[in-house]
Length: 146
Image 1 (cartoon, one colour):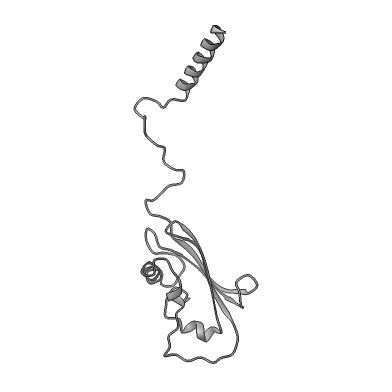
Image 2 (tube, rainbow, N blue to C red):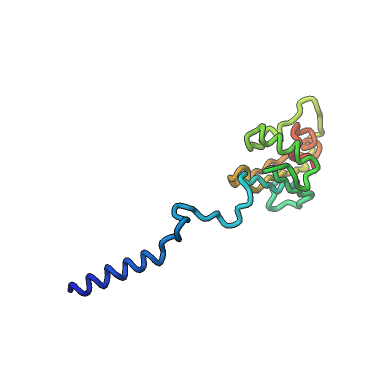
């Protein structure tokens, strides 16, 4: 029994040494795979879809928007759109708020806008339906103006 216990102790010691960090690296954590920036990712795909919802409708336009570390993407005004999102703390409702001084007809020809992706490291998914393209054009924000 004594020999078995000593054998297990030696085996445990040798396994511990085999997996111990090399000298000079104790306490150093490996860098995460694919980490290229200190900024939390902020990248969105924005769409305009004909129809009452983005699932069954026809996508009319789509753009990309990245806001960290700098504003870029296929959005026509990425700096303004990123600034708008930062001012709203990543919210989208102010971007679809309507200008009360503009008038549109009341016909039902729905247009849906969506934002899907990551904002400051959090997954986001947003959708809003306007009654028609004219109503969409009265939105005060620049985020969905493409």
